Length: 344
Ligand SMILES: NC(=O)c1ccc[n+]([C@@H]2O[C@H](COP(=O)([O-])OP(=O)(O)OC[C@H]3O[C@@H](n4cnc5c(N)ncnc54)[C@H](OP(=O)(O)O)[C@@H]3O)[C@@H](O)[C@H]2O)c1
Image (cartoon, rainbow, N blue to C red; front, side):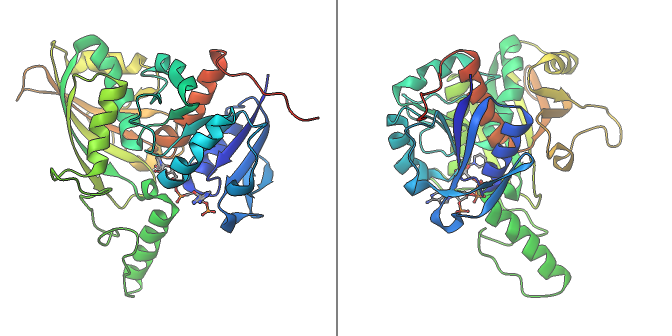
């Protein structure tokens, strides 16, 4: 059984990674179609050892396409995902457009795979925000054992989370600093080269940012509505890989050694935790990897049943493209999707 797959946003950071991952994992695809805006029509993108010619989304006919992985931003998704879903093609969307819709499952396969069954209500499945995806992969196995009450998280998010323009801005500004040229600020609100910016997405009335709110809402939707979570999201001058300093308060006692053992066995997690120089993961090493890495696991004696840890993952992979492909694999494994009859 094989499926016709469309990748929308195929020229972008997430879309290109999506094509790599579909190829690497040998997803059962009879055909993969690369779609982007009209600007990119006719350009080429790599898919394994092949190149695909990019087609324009707005002239593409989805009637014989089975799965559409969508990474072209919220506005494109709001306009297109419902139309594509109505044509019987399952949309797996990377934007925030449908994440909080009760009729759209929000899925991390290691955390809440059973919720995927709801997809048929709209034929849309949402992929979480990059910072939430890696966080819940690390929290879920600990929550199952010791029940999380409250989480305090500070993120250190790479510029690739802001798309290819974000990566270009870090590169251009860094070069400008080195050659003593003028440093232009376009994509971010302040200079990102040799700096950190405590602001991602728009401000809300309560002083939190939308990125911080997403981490709260998505953790509750996927893991447990009873978990209290507060976040500070920060953009840092790193190209790929989001890091998180996480403090957790549990209902039941749990030691650092127990947490380490639980996480070593947990799906999608890799523990790298030696109390010595370099005995921890940094975002540079996470780039190109599938795992959510956990380091610096230690007990926090300032609260009852407290633990602190450091969680790092490649935001373009587990935070976006890998998770989306895993959702597509879940649909196939559970027999929830069947290839449409293709025109001869
Ligand atoms: N980066 C991350 O870590 C991350 C993580 C989770 C979720 N996401 C989400 O994934 C989405 C894409 O992010 P990204 O980082 O890949 O952004 P990006 O590098 O800026 O790429 C955007 C892609 O969307 C395409 N696009 C823009 N307008 C379009 C239109 N009107 N019709 C069709 N295609 C259009 C672009 O095509 P052109 O090249 O033709 O303009 C490009 O392929 C966003 O919704 C983002 O929030 C990103």
